[in-house]
Amino acid sequence: PIIIGNNHSKFPEAQALIDFGGMFSVSNQLEFDKTLSELIINTQKRLSSGNKNRSYIKKNKGAVIQILDYLRI
Image (cartoon, rainbow, N blue to C red; front, side, top):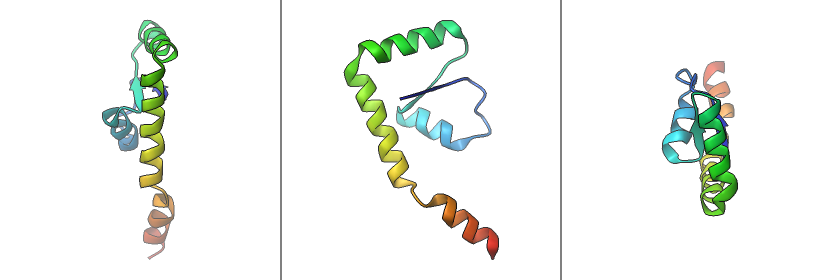
């Protein structure tokens, strides 16, 4: 699982992972502490979000190479 701050509007991948359930956005220390504690305590949620991230990465593997190839044209 990934925990990030709330300044991610320029990163569509971050929003996609948040929507997918593998990343959590927090606005302050209290939200961070709560999210982290929940992930530590709730093994199923932690494993599920980690697996969602793995799936997202596998699905998008090679995207950088595709972008670079496009830019070389």
